[in-house]
Length: 219
Image 1: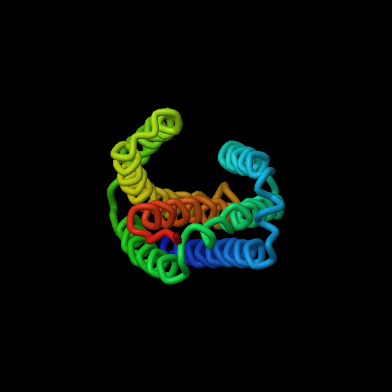
Image 2: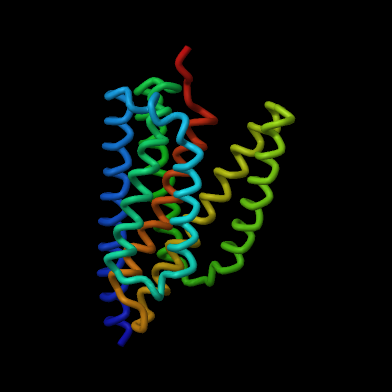
């Protein structure tokens, strides 16, 4: 029986990382195209709409997963990744390619380590997830306040806090996916896409924080 669980888990995780890779790939392609085609200047005024759409998709994915068909879940994931790509085009304006590449490699190494720890541990990481989400909520509120205050030390501190939060969430989400993969009442494909979406968010946010903290901006 235990062997069956392990096989099911590994199969689901393989699909999860495949979907995650495809999501990151679509983000990269859209970001590069948006930047090099000059389209980022045209959509700059509509970024607020894009961000709202991303929030809506995240909420739908989070709360309606059991009710959504697998195909709809997949479409929402790729829509989110492409919208993210459109907003990410600004990164090519703010940072040089070498810095972006270094940040990407650092993110991949950190993310891989944390994902492995989340998979390997036999402990329940629910408390860690709760703490990380609560801390993230507070950090986001402080970030909004700091937009008006303009404190650089607070900005740097928040970058580090958010980096640590998503580091913890990576381990938590990986552990959660492993647990969900053993719930035979939920469609395997939906678990894989949902898991890919959560890990995608973790990877993206770790990348952004590393880039913000260590990245070299263009003059």
